Length: 106
Image 1 (tube, rainbow, N blue to C red):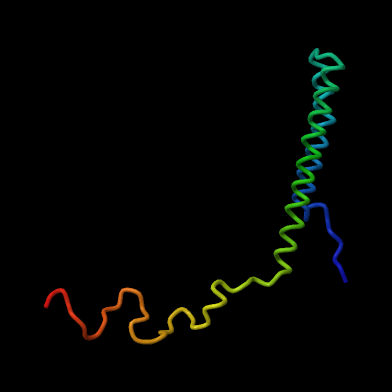
Image 2: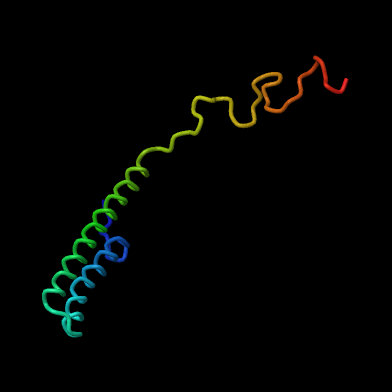
């Protein structure tokens, strides 16, 4: 059974709601302070376009996050099954000295 989502469970929705509120408030403030109705309408259209683009990006990000949560995390270096601390054989460790052979010190 799915739990009903409450408004405060959706931070992206909160951002979009505040943006819509701003899109409605800004033209009123612009007209009150002397901007023409045409200028306020242009500002409103610009804010609405930015709000719509941000909403699309936020929803896309949420979907990608959900999809990533559904896919099990792949093992890094899945082809190397030896493990981090296992040794593959003599001299397989990086930086190990070889036994025998010619040493530069003599």
